[in-house]
Amino acid sequence: MSTGWWTASAKWGVTLGANLDELYREVILDHCQNPRRMGAMEHPTHSLGLHNPTCGDKIAVDLRVEDGRIADYRFSGHGCSISMASASMLGDAVVGKTVAEAEQVAQGFVRFLTGDPSTASPAGDLEALAGVKNFPARVKCATLAHNALMEALEGAARPPGPH
Ligand code: ZN
Image (tube, rainbow, N blue to C red):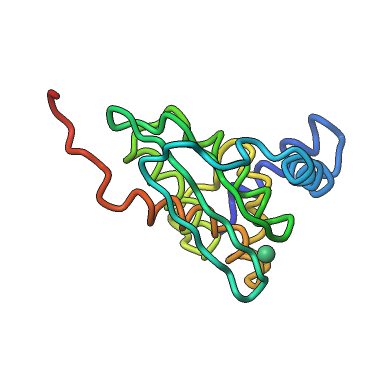
């Protein structure tokens, strides 16, 4: 089942009269050329770097967690356009969210790209990378920052309740 991707495809194709692949390619290119939240963070509370040897991507994710929420996100490193665009998109998707919500975003994205049919297609700009699941060799590129975020946050989630 690949409903999310194709439903969106039909919908956008009709409304915009544009080729969806081109549209998504533009979103990805825009994030590559103007990466959001790129650069080192002064005092991250959580930080982790990962390397994708298959492609040579190296991405480090810095996070500042305050009151159980992602107050800030920065990434640094270098890699292919897919890995950089994905790291750039991830910031917008997690800043302001609780640790648990951010983990769900990252985990859902990884599951979707690795072919878990029960996972909904990614939301926001990350949707532009949904098609990567048809290119298994690039999945590691697209999920690198997400995996770094999840590993960085491991154990950071707080149980709900009064502070
Ligand atoms: Zn790559």
